[in-house]
Image 1 (cartoon, rainbow, N blue to C red):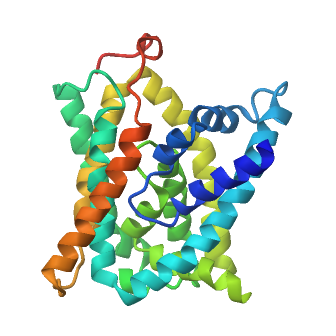
Image 2 (image 1 turned 90 degrees about the horizontal axis):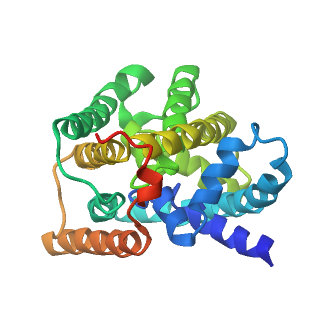
Length: 293
C-alpha cells in the first residue's frame, strides 16, 4: 500500500516539473514527504546503513514522477499551443501566489540589509539568466530545438538548475526551463514520447542533469535553510520577483483583458491555496544553528 501511495504522490510531484509556478518543494511539503525526500537524496550515498530504506522511498516516488511528467506534458503542451497568452498570465499568477507561502516559511522574516542583499541577488540571477540564454545557446529563445551540441549543452546547464529549483520551497523546475527558454522544446520532446518519438539529446540532457541538480541542491538547500533560513528565503523571494520579468511575453499582449485578468487571478488563487496549506514556519529547534541574517 505504501508503494502505491508513494507512486501517486510522485505523480503529483512530477506534474510540478511541467506546470510553471507550482513549486515541487511546496507540493512535497503539502504531501508530507519533503523532509524524507531531502534526507533520502542528501544521504543516499553517505549513510550506507540506510540506503535500502532510502531506495524503498525513492523508487516508487520516482516511478510516479516520470508518469506525472509525461501525462502533464501532453496536457500543458496543448494548452500553451491553443491559448499562449492566457497560459502565460496563469503561470505568472501561480508565481505570485507562492509569495505568501514563502513569507511564512520562517518565523522571522523582518527585512535587514543582508536579507535585502539576498533578495537583490536572487532577482539579478533571474534577469541575467533571461538575458544571457540566447547568447549561451547561440540561438534565439523561440528557436530552440535541442538537436545541436551547443543547445544541448545549454539545456544541460538549465536542467541542472531546474532540478535544484524543484526541491527548493517556493520555486519550481519547469519555471527555470521556461526562463532559460528551453521549456517548449523539452515539453514537446516529453509529450512526443507517447507517440514513440524520442528526441534523445533533449530527453537525456534534461533527465540526467535535472537528476544531478536534485541530488546536489537537496544537500545544499537543506544545509543553507538550516543555517541561514531567513536570508535563504529572501533569496527565493528575489528569484520570484525577477521571474515576473522572465515570464512576461516578449511580443505585444493581445487578447481579451477580462480573460487575461481571470487567468491571472485563478493562478494566484491556486498557488495561494496550495502554499498556505503547506507552508510551516521554521521551528525554534531548526533555527538554533541559524545565523540571524
